[in-house]
Amino acid sequence: MAANMYRVGDYVYFENSSSNPYLIRRIEELNKTASGNVEAKVVCFYRRRDISNTLIMLADKHAKEIEEESEITVEADLTDKQKHQLKHRELFLSRQYESLPATHIRGKCSVALLNETESVLSYLDKEDTFFYSLVYDPSLKTLLADKGEIRVGPRYQADIPEMLLEGESDEREQSKLEVKVWDPNSPLTDRQIDQFLVVARAVGTFARALDCSSSVRQPSLHMSAAAASRDITLFHAMDTLYRHSYDLSSAISVLVPLGGPVLCRDEMEEWSASEASLFEEALEKYGKDFNDIRQDFLPWKSLTSIIEYYYMWKTTDRYVQQKRLKAAEAESKLKQVYIPTYSKPNPNQISTSNGKPGTVNGAVGTTFQPQNPLLGRACESCYATQSHQWYSWGPPNMQCRLCAICWLYWKKYGGLKMPTQSEEDKLSPSPTTEDPRVRSHVSRQAMQGMPVRNTGSPKSAVKTRQAFFLHTTYFTKFARQVCKNTLRLRQAARRPFVAINYAAIRAEYADRHAELSGSPLKSKSTRKPLACIIGYLEIHPAKKPNVIRSTPSLQTPATKRMLTTPNHTSLSILGKRNYSHHNGLDELTCCVSD
Image (cartoon, rainbow, N blue to C red; front, side):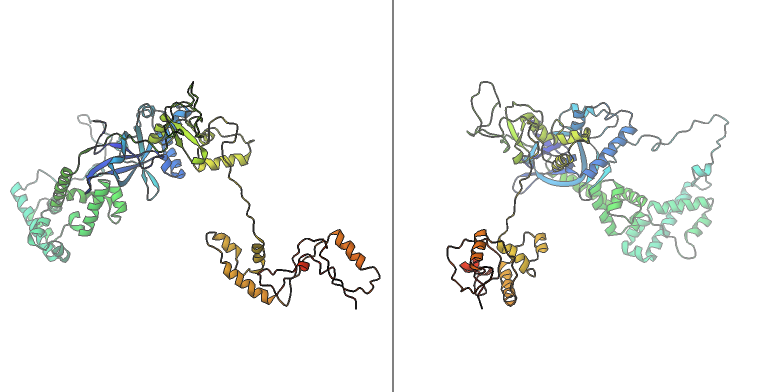
């Protein structure tokens, strides 16, 4: 019961795909929709597989810097398998919020800020435990160090000097250490000091009545009097008393100089209503992260001004009202939700031909021969050959599978237990004598995220792409040369998804056909068969006597097809030729005696 009860602040697994790893989120709110369903507003965490390789290199560099600064070694005593699995436990925090159905929750996990004083093996020893040290911005694609660490050391704490002995003088220059602004042993009584402060408030109220911008911001007398009673007016009055050695007449004359009464404003009066709204919106998004508030919302304000305005804003009625509204909203929202254990079968389960899930693969004494080609293969992660349930993993053409234990590891941690071939190559690079084409091909497949088979088969572990041959027609070859104005090959190749307009090509050929009617195309002569040559020499002796033109016989051997002058009387686009022209018989009987 308690394991299926999820509350605000819990770190949980969300499933958005049956084949992809779980999403890791932190529940911020639980809201009930109008249809009665429960939605969870969550904070997103990202894995290493979700960010680019450039940011992964920055994360590794940051981890090395932490290892150098800390006293405990992080990577020195770890095996390759532990280093591989440790990467699966690293997450990246983000400030991105999203709403997901609560029914997609698949369990709880634990996410903590990386503890520099704790060994990283403690994260591997605990199930469902993750850590993070960097903040990822999905929109800007950046990584920043989290500001949640405890700042301990000489950079953050002051060095306390040793106590001076009795009679020993302090050799430090006091003007650089502190400035005296008030003397409690003044000749004035408390009543006189309070009267002077009342005069200073009255002068401040009168100054705001004379100032045009202040009369717009504080249109009523009560608002002007309240603004004049702030600490900035009292600090100015007390500082004036100290600078004039607590002489009331001299201090009052300074409050009202020749140019008019002195107007002292703090950050609450300097900020406009729009700036105050931006600050409240930024505070809702970033909390008390004043650096991000200044960078994203108020870049024209100084950090000191923003911090000072924040603590003044907490004393206003606006802050009290927002606090009450948030408390009322928190009371109306759900505190926890019960999600039953998800028991539906996964679509990636490998089943036998009779529709039942496969039991122990390769069990002794079984006579059933599975029809599924995946059955009989080893697990891609642990290389096991027996499991109570198998799951297909990776692209369908690779036909890879995982056992039940490795499948659960893949869903929770987003990787395999054992390093793949591409990761082993990174840890131990291959020798230079290896074929560079094979090495580049394997690295390309690894970059594309394709799984590599680990079945021990002597065949190649990577499938090659099927080659194809594009066979063009004679019409296409002829149109390339004749219809160059309409058929632009380079433009057509750059836009393969746009169909070629055959009607326009036919129209251009008809025009070109009419233009070339006076100048027929020259065709290359082809070599005649030996029988044709002998027949020609028998008909045409050396003395060239007058020969009467004979009718060509149908028994003349056929020759190879030649590209000759097209018949202009034909209705075809390529010009059909008669039988004698097609077989080259007209050339054999073209000599006529005078």
